[in-house]
Image (tube, rainbow, N blue to C red; front, side, top):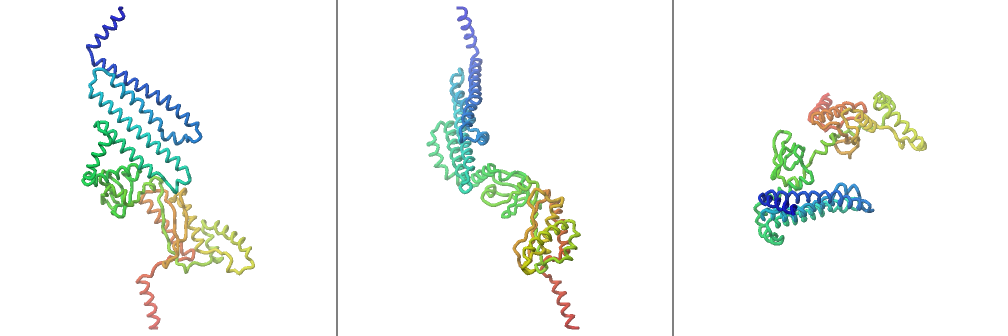
Length: 418
């Protein structure tokens, strides 16, 4: 009897402090939500993961990157709060309703995110199929994601406004034309901003090049409607945000991240100076440290090949040319140059001959991306090659200038007078 009296006394005392009873009940609800969350993630999620990992079609790496089950488990504490908040005494009806609507909105958002993760997993699995290169489905899945998030947003909005989704759609349909007309630029810029952010197309600090808008410099600011580029001549170009999605531009971030910048320069050789090398010329070029080993190796290779063609004339035999030796010299020179990146592509190739000579193109990468250092390395290489070309019996093609014609005519005139 005394125990019942003690309990009654405690209850009478608690009735004098309704806020204490409310906080106690609210703490119990929150504690139950935390316990439910731990149970769902530590027990249920792990159990389902182990079960899936034993299935033959499961890929542990993909499921580790995209945890759909863990996202779905977030619904459990939201359900506990949504149902338990009604049991808290002395809590206003408006606050209970608001908490329930917030929990319900969280459930809708969690389901949408889980479906998006499921689509990502499906895309990754599909990309492992060789046919995915010819028939990618990423664009279609992104459209499905967009529809899912639009429906989710309408359901969340309908939850707080206490309206049906179809009623909201009917209302928005009537306003859509007006909104599109009034906020056309804003909507386009907003969509473009989302795409730029999602695909990581441009960041502040990137060097971008957009010739159509005379932009060539670093991005210094990105807002909803405009992207500001400071050009290298210190002028500023303002680009509409949606132009980065609809128009073509070049982003040099890949070059900056790689730490190497490409050299792609050509020397136009006068084709009339290309010839087979004599023994004297080969002996002379063997004094070049870079060519000594090449000439010996190449000579042995040609001798072995020509031994198989002894019954043919000398014109059918392979012989060293000054142009081929010059190409080998350039390649060896670039390989030894301290400013050239050794882990990147490096080659010297001939392009299609033109009326302006035979282009001999250098394709290599510098080991630095600093502009001044890059230009110095490139210029030093070209200076050296232009200066050493005569040693190979070659000449650089150059269109005759007015002074060349003047000297030619002057020589002709003096001959006639004589």
